[in-house]
Image (cartoon, one colour):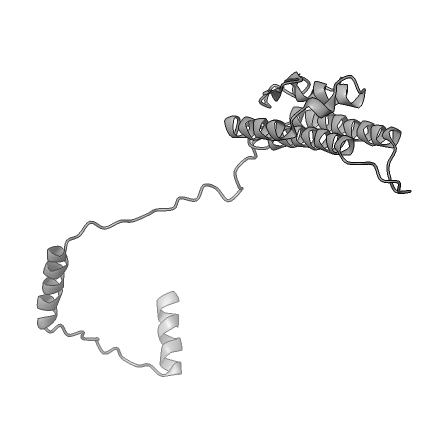
Length: 196
């Protein structure tokens, strides 16, 4: 029997989808296995009730990993498919699958599911960036960002504006002192006198 939730790493929530129908009560993976081996009568199982219980399960455990919910959905879909094959009249077509072919397809799906689960276990055991591994900072050093906020009122702004206007009313003059101009020969002679 394929057990979905017990083999997964502890970091994955282990909530098992147990169904309660008139002909069966227990985990869905066991029901699928029994249906595959034809040890349970699928005609007595209500697919509508199964779908409603699946929706309630997903709504109740919204924190469950998407992979586990998808596994349960695949199982419910296979059960629905098997029951629909049971209920629909059989047509004589060359494309019609035999029960052995369906069983092989189901085995293949279960093997794929098991392979995905073992791969996910291996991935969960590996170190995770941000949880187990932390990269060092950049070599440029720490950059500090400042977020400057001003808490001024309209009155403060008007007072500052009037202060600036009053200062501008006083004329200020810039005077530049006139320096003596030298010819090239006089400048060379002056540099020789200064530097010896």
